[in-house]
Image (cartoon, rainbow, N blue to C red; front, side, top):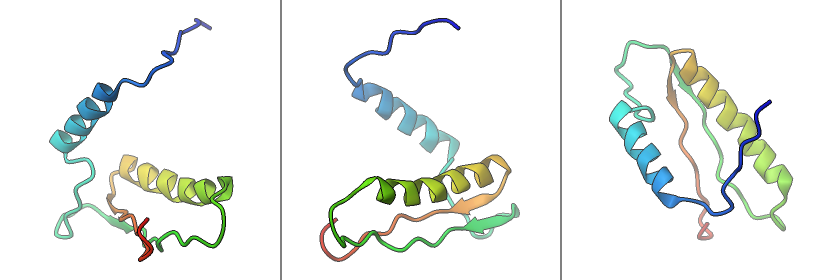
Length: 88
């Protein structure tokens, strides 16, 4: 396997370019009148019950992977991110 050097600094321009590409493709746009099958994930807001730990990330990872998989299968996916009333 070929070794690839990973840059140590994050290039923020990459994020801007990817966001523009996704907007152009309308990748994350949900249209309820679309003919494709719909897949909706209703997520509760994260609630601070203690210190944030890896379990919080893991719970969101499952839902994010499912949303991406359904998009790849051709579904119109609505996956809103919820926030709580405590300023998160």
